[in-house]
Length: 438
Image (tube, rainbow, N blue to C red; front, side):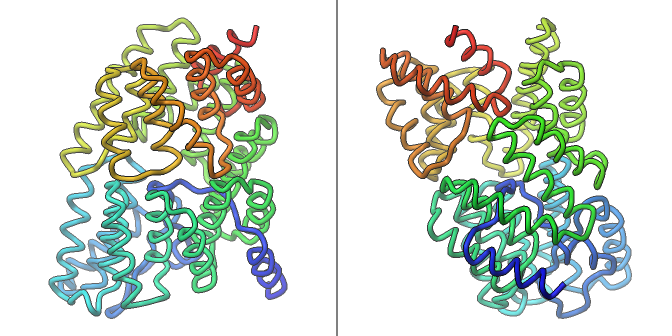
């Protein structure tokens, strides 16, 4: 084990590991997955919620403990942080209010200068609400109290990534690995490097991280991340093997189901694809998977079922906004393709005013295109690709913008590139590009 850890550290010093879900990525890791059974002792630092299926029993034990020990500040902080993770898994924004109350209770019992756990939980809550400047500020405050807090180290990376500050995010990810090596640090290191275009380096290091995963939840997470790299590179068969590995480790692992559904759709296996996406939407009714499920129904000629999915896109956003969640990026792309295009452009502009990332650049470019403003859209589409991030949907959007501007050679080139990555395209995008390529 010492040799394995030494090799892993050496590898991470040269190449940065791969793939995670920004602002929705799990907190889990060895510490969360294996040691989250008992409530934290008094005076404990930030506690990472358990990975996988251990979260529900963990929260139940915390509530029972607090019924007997209501002045345990660390337990209130752990409960609040656990509620944030529960909300992420269930896509239930109403849980954020409960998280906020628990974290506030902790800070009343113990001041912030000695309560890195509550500050880290508040950072996680701010990130979940997509308030990334606040998430970064709170994570830094938590680290000023405890420089080795695993949760605060992870959220600091997330916030920097979501603010488009990829250089500082890379530095913060390296620091997280140096201070608290584990799956949360490894996957964040990788995601930063993938955004910078170093996908090969991300793959090599994530394979080492996967080999070090112990808990079923960690094995599922790292296998899915490897599957996502395969899917992004157009390697459907390899991606399916990784998703199968993830689902064997943790049955019902939602990111693996989502990825498998997308690959199955790309292969024309519509029945399995729809089944996977229905399972995802049943547990996480977010705009992106709902829109994707609608496109799968459309591809099968089930237009009424598709319209039901598109019509429901705003329901989650309405509840989320009531809980102070910034939903603009979540809804901009879905509305641009399946809703009110004026609303989509307004949302994309609002998100761009807050943060300049590759994803917000792409979303604003596509919303502008859908409103016929292609001259303004093209510089943003180019900016989305500038760091080296190679994304099939970005290529599709850029090709359509270039075609609208009469840049046929550029559009044809980007169409070919996108089709080589067809497993990472939505059904609507794939159909449109295939028609263009004939």
